[in-house]
Amino acid sequence: MRAISVVIPACNAAATIAATLASLRSEAEIIGEILLVDDASTDGTATVAQEAAAGLSLPLRVLPASCRDAGDARNAALVEAAHPWVYLIDADDLHLQGGLRSLLRKAEEQPKADMIVGAYRRRVNGQDRQIKVPNGYRAACLANASAYVKGDIRSVAVGSVLASRSLIGETRFPVGLAYDEDTLFWARLMSKASLAMVSQPVMVYEVSPVRSDDRFAINPVRRFLDWRRQLRTLTDCNIPMSALKTREGLVALKIARVHYARGDLDTAARFLAVAAAAPKRRSEAWRCLRYRFKLAARRRLSAQSIQLQGAL
Image 1 (tube, rainbow, N blue to C red):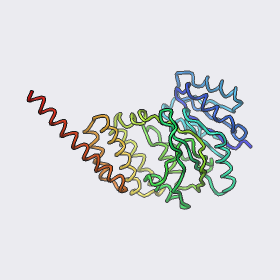
Image 2: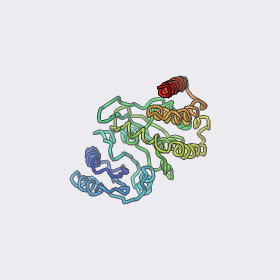
Image 3: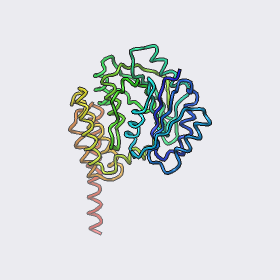
Image 4: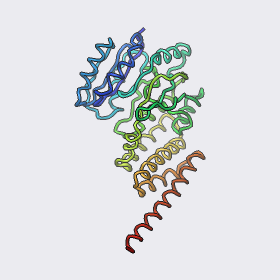
């Protein structure tokens, strides 16, 4: 039974796409199509993918695009998806054998469920880390969406979810964002989804801390404002503004931490002020306070160093 459309956005992924496709080989019997969006690649990604898929007997279709945006590339494939279930995975991540079958089996066991969330393994700079098991979800879909936005329940990785095509409908990823576009997409789905959980890992999520931090370091103010504008559109699916403001604080704190680590204390202070003003849990309040002390200490040291240099 070929019930699943697999969506893979790919931009210059020639070095990793063959391994990603190979990781899906064990699920070939239930995969109806693999839609690979070749997003303006210049390294032969499409050719590598086609050759790998042919050798693996996988039903690959390449969709050429010039989105230069992972969210928009996924959207191009969502329009084309033809099967009842949709599975998204990135071109540098790995599916785990039996993962899709376990997600689909859970959907069959709970026929009202239209979004199945599985566990996943984080791999940081090539080193396996902890397994992230979905937890904290409730029966009320809007409560799940609000808690997800606030960070009260475990994050979903692209590649750990099976969603029905009917649930997705016209929902699309926001475009033009440097980060968090997947969070906004999942929150929209959760606001109307009946969820089911799978506790076994279904994929390996590759993380590069440097690359992740770089997203927050470039044009931080403009990128944050663009993201916040999209975040606040979630009010149209009845996610409360209080939850959205909590999310703003969480992201602002991440940006502050990156700029503090890289020595840009003025930018760190600016975003720390946004984080401090947002509704937050006690743990985030403590982090904000700790970074305020650390910023003040580094500024005092910097001032003393300048005075010493002037005296010499």
